Structure formats: structure tokens, C-alpha cells
Amino acid sequence: MPSIERTAYPRYPRLLTLKDIQTSFTPRQDEIEWASKFARTPSSRLALLVQLKCFQFLKYFSSTDLIPAEIVEHISASLGMLPTQDIAYVSTTALYRHHKVIREVLGVTPYTDAQTRPLAVSLARGAAEVVETRVDIINCVIEDLIRHGHELPAFSTLDDIAEEVHAAAQTALYQSIDKQLTLSQRQWLDKLLVTDLPIRRTLFNQLKKAAKKTSKGHLEMLLDQVRWLDTLPSCDAHLDAVPATKLKHMAERASVLDAADMRDFVPAKRYTLILSLIRQMRVRARDD
Image 1: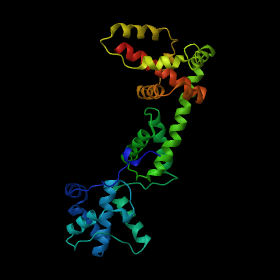
Image 2: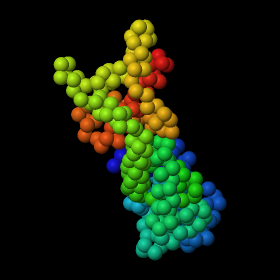
Image 3: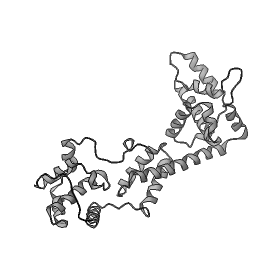
Image 4: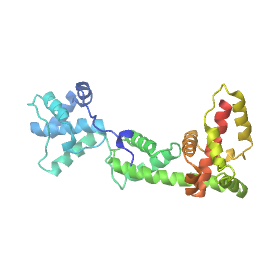
């Protein structure tokens, strides 16, 4: 599972400054008046406003015991109450009633597996066609769910969706490229991973060496590199539909793997990675 810190999933800052609290968690006068219509007691109004401001910040309801005490204390002071550092509910019914009225006033659709999950999966599939990593997919889904007015699910739910969609998208990409290859192209790609006994080195190692950026001062070396790359069979047409971000990521991944690692992959995957590396090397060599 990707670390939540690497994603855009909203969470409370580890260090809440006074400016943070005043900017994000100060209830407006109209919000205080709204809360007074639904909560009769001071403690209930405090709880409702704390839930409201936290939801506006997070885009989901966090557990009440995870709400920073500084936020509760600030909101209680805004209401003219004695300093209070936590909120409590006498029943889950009261808690869910507050959740319901907050969604209604904000115009937010609650997350459900029956209705929202299919949308999240669809959004993830769209993102997976352009971006490469699970973190990027998660970030795109977060942005789109919020834009569509939906409550965010738990992070683990988003991660499960991203993992499933990412794996399916990668497999589909590898297979689509593999289907375009001729038998001779597959044989040539496999030969790259076979060790040449006299020099105990594979052609794939030579590819990776050529992938290292050469100084612009070494013009002859650059020209040699371009000429050598031009001798390799061209499969660029097979990659024309692949977004540049994906090509770059796959090329970078291939450049840090050795021949043994590549042989462990299924053929469709290793062919795609090698072709991406060659494609990026050609582009970079000419740019240099």
C-alpha cells in the first residue's frame, strides 16, 4: 500500500498552527446560526460545528477521537464557551444525524459501495490511461470525487481500487503492444537478454549503458550512440498511442533492472519495458 503521506488524501496536519486553525476551522456566523437550528444544547452545537468544519477540511468524516483538541478548543471559544478539547455523542444515532444534516447543507453525496464505488472505479480507469503509478491514480480519483460532490471513502478503499485498476491497465497495455509484435521482433527482444559467453554480457546491458546521459562535450560519442541506436529494429509505431508519462516511467524502470530481472517477467511485460527504454534513448540521444 502506498504511504498516505505520498498522496493527496486529506488529513489533519501533524502540526496545527494558529493560522491554520483560524483559516480552516473558524465557523462563520451563518454556520453558527445554522447549527442553532439543529442542535439545542451548547455541547450539541459544538459537536455539530466541529464535524462541519472538519468535514469541509477533510471531505470525509473522521473518527471523533482523531479530531485534534486544538480544533475543538478553538471552535468552543468561537461559540463563547469554556475551553473544551473533545466532543462526544450519547448515541450513534445522534452522530449519524449530524452527518446527514452536514451532507445536506453542503450538497455532498455520501460514499456507498453500491453507488459511489462504480464511479470511483470508472474515474480510476480513466486516470490509469494517462498516469502511471497507483499514487497518481489515487490523487486523480480524490480530485474527481470532490469535484463531483462526493464524500471521500477511507484511504484503504481508494488504494484497493487503484491497485486493481492499475494492475488491469498495465496488463492491457503490455498485451496490446505484444499483439503488434512479429515473431522475429519477439525473438530479437529475447536475444537481448541472452548472455554473450565471450564477453559475459548481454546486449541489454549495452542498451542500459547507452541509456546513460552523455556529456554534450563528447560529440563523437553522441554521434556513435545515435548511429548505434539507429541499427536497432524500430518498433516505435507500436508505442505511438502510449502517453509520454507512461513511456518515461517504463523506460526508467527498465534502466534499473538487469537481464535476469527482465527474464522473470512475462514476455509481454518485458517486451514493452525494453521497447520503452529504446524509444526514450533514441529521443534523448537526438535531443543531446
